[in-house]
Image (cartoon, rainbow, N blue to C red; front, side):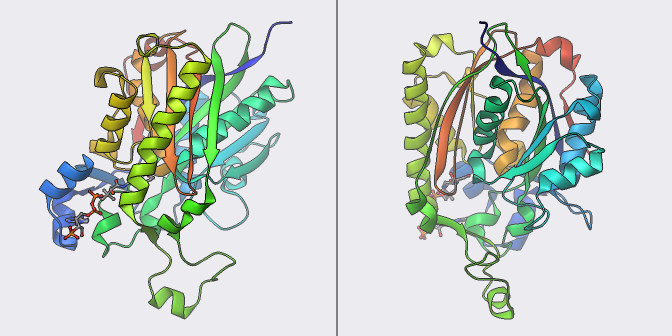
Length: 344
Ligand code: UT7
């Protein structure tokens, strides 16, 4: 029997129009363009400033053009998964809210919270529903409104993060393309280095937690940096060995965009020349679940059917891993020469 695989059948990104540049940050905290550029590679981030808008709105703005250009009717979608760490509300899920705004009625919907590894966890989860034959048209929303949980008086975190989102369509295929393998790992003991102190059931919101500025990202960057390099390069190696892939067999590596120095270290440890490593952190910063979709969208026009692609990510949890897929469609034809990232 021919093996059914889940293939990415389309992608579209969305970033809000407002920019937060290094020059802006120099006016807000004790930092400099030189420090931010040399330590992170970031020059600017997009920030969602419109009142009463959240991840579901970014998801809708990414998904509508995707459905239109792939000729997909909302009635075909039978599963919606949203990868986010900044859900609109604690509950219901942002997947439910996004599906409702899009008019999707025939799907079951849930969120995946795996911090910056959310997309690779979600693609792996979604692929199982497709491989089993139970689901045929999965909409993945992957993004974050990081500005909603960033303390813009904390120079250690506010220079890193931005807002952004992607939407991907997954469909069954039997032509040998699609998601072929994944190595996903977690280590909850890493929570001490990257977490939000309050707002959950451990420490519900109160005047005290607000006064203590505990509803923001806390990060001890050094240990996270080290584990990110180890985790991403280690799982890339595992997936490559398991699938008999040499660096030359891989068309593109798509790393989570947390820090240019992390990306360059991972590429060099796995022997990938930077020309085949997607990197756009300079213009978007770390959009958490948005980074890998924004890379894939930006590079869509270069992607060819059969290209071997490795996605790799590391994030809070700790969570990390790598996914191996063979690209399904002719990206140049699908994108018509345009970069499929909407900005408004
Ligand atoms: O996305 C998910 C996971 N997250 C990551 O993968 C992020 C991993 N970590 C990192 O990317 C880096 O650790 C950071 C970018 C967060 C920090 O860079 P670093 O090179 O590790 O800096 P550091 O935290 O060791 O700080 C070095 C110095 C410190 O000053 P002292 O103590 O040496 O005087 C900081 O106070 O740089 C100072 N510093 C800054 N200076 C100017 C920290 N942030 C800033 C800043 N501007 N924005």
